[in-house]
Structures are given as C-alpha cells and as structure tokens.
Image 1 (cartoon, rainbow, N blue to C red):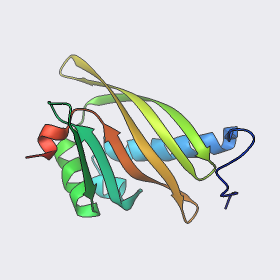
Image 2 (cartoon, helix red, strand yellow):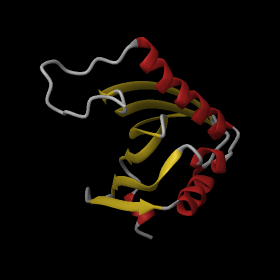
Image 3 (cartoon, helix red, strand yellow):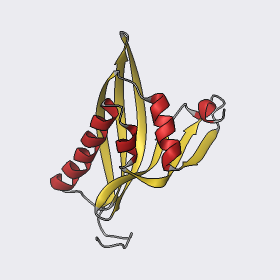
Length: 143
C-alpha cells in the first residue's frame, strides 16, 4: 500500500515498472477483447462499474453496471475489427490511475477513431477498471 496522503510537495511520478505493469494489464484486456471473451474482460473489472457518456443532445448519461450488464453490453459491442490502441496513463498515485486511450478501428475498409478513458484502481494488489468514459453512446444507453 502507498502513502494515502493526497497532499504532497511533488506530483506522483510512476516508475517505468509501474507504467509497464499497467500497460501489460491493458495488453491482457485487449487480447480478451480480440478473442471476444467478454467474461474474461469482466474478470478484470471491479463492480459496480460506472459508465459515463453523453447523448446526441450533449446531455450526460451515467449508469452503474453490474457484471452481467457489462458482459451483455460488451457482447453486443464486440467486433472482430482490427483495433490499434495508444494509451496515455496518468497516475494519481501508485494505486490509482486514469488511462486515456486513442483507438483506431478498421473494419470493411473504413477507419474510425475513438478516444476514451478508464479509471483504474488496484484491488488486492491487482489493477481493475472501475469506470469507463466515452462520448457518444448515451442514446443507445437510454433505450
């Protein structure tokens, strides 16, 4: 466990090893996503999971998902498209991080770009996602 005092004289700087550990977690998650193994993806989360997006009116939509809702939603969204991810972790301390991902998805000759964020926290020494944030899905979630 790390020092829990949020007030420090210098910002937290993750070591190369800490950054690699977090990015390795995402490599495993991406492998499950490529295999369309949503149950294994869910095993990497801490539920309930907070999902935040916006709708076509620009209004915030936030939901709390349990494991079953995550698996069902990810199963509907799963695709065998070619996906390339570039991740930018921002560590709050050794146990909390926000990771912004720039993703390129190529399917049927069309390339799409997405940016999303995951809030990450260590649980029993292992990284888990606790929140997902991505624009544009609110109309679908409001159905």
